[in-house]
Image (cartoon, rainbow, N blue to C red; front, side, top):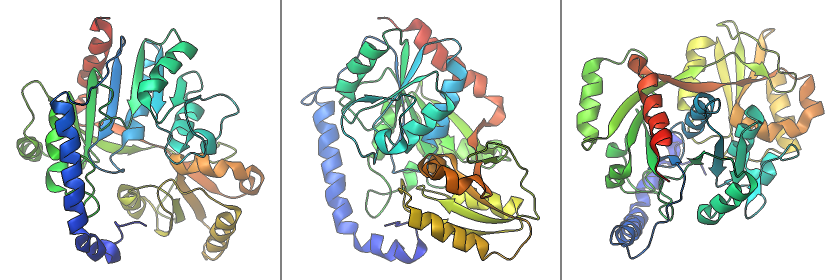
Length: 356
């Protein structure tokens, strides 16, 4: 159930007592780790965690991809993810025959885009890391996808993402809000990344946000906006150019498509939406419904747009999609104020100076 739908927001308010119970459980769990009653394990190599305090929609996957692109030519990088909503259990290393059902959609997305980089999944990262190092002994650093709240492991470098339109300072605990961890947990971060910012963000507004999140001494704060690339065909991979003459059928199964919908409002004539739950596993009936909806759009300039995360769950319908104008819209992070090199320097310096 998607609680971000406006009609369901009153339901979230009614669930407020449950959010108090959840907040108490999160507080107690963190207290046990802070008091060393529960222990965190560190490893003898650089571990870089990319995560958030809320559920979905802050841009973790594009950030992991940004790091892969920047680091893979200088270091032997591996990625470890939980593999959320996959149909398998335990540790698995992605291989040429892997599917999204076996390793999860986000790991499959990483593996498809960067086949030369080791991508592994495992619910228990504390056990998966040694297995990954056994399989890839040359690994020099591991990117931990969505691991900020996973305190059984102690990364050497924590990157915390929070969305411009839903800062963790303004949020509340699940199920009334989107927080799955305490706001004060931001103290564990080395970098706080404010994502999905407007491109024309003023220095004054950046200063106000920094004041609100109150970074600790030594914590670095960066601001990024979303960068959309040229849509490419889901099977044939050729690109097209989206224009304000296009009518778009948007097909998504992601946590927070708000920024994507705003982009289509600006860049296309109009769009129609087919929204599925986050990590939705598409069926042949879903595809038939998508086709029916698309055929019902009366326009000679119409296309289907989906996300890279959805694409890895749709490509199993190879033959059915080959002649359908379904295009994948790539997404990435754009650092405001030209601060990408400053951020990259922090990461590379951490890897290079890590004391084994």
